[in-house]
Length: 134
Image 1 (cartoon, rainbow, N blue to C red):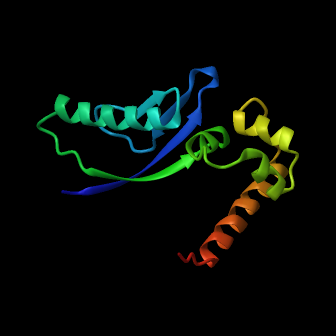
Image 2 (image 1 turned 45 degrees about the vertical axis):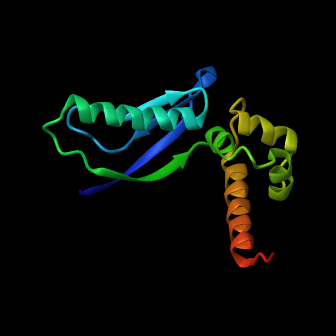
């Protein structure tokens, strides 16, 4: 079966939870989903895709290869094992402000956003450079 590369963006939807939106213009529907958590929104998105397969049985639906894009609050909801205060310190940002950014209750400046992206890149590089032993 054919594979279709799509980008699905996950964003915080105010106090309503999280929303997934797909960049691909499907012929009969817009692919998306919602939920109180990122995982629920992702599940809802794929459930909807499966429902559309049943709704249009004569159409060929490809397997999806998804690239995920998260806004800041969605990122921390999805990767909830990250300690927000410690990530803030690692990035050189006030933990109090950073918690607001992660919750979506305050917007960060472009300068702060660049600091965060650089910190995440540095973390990824450090993690890739290690070897674990048992």
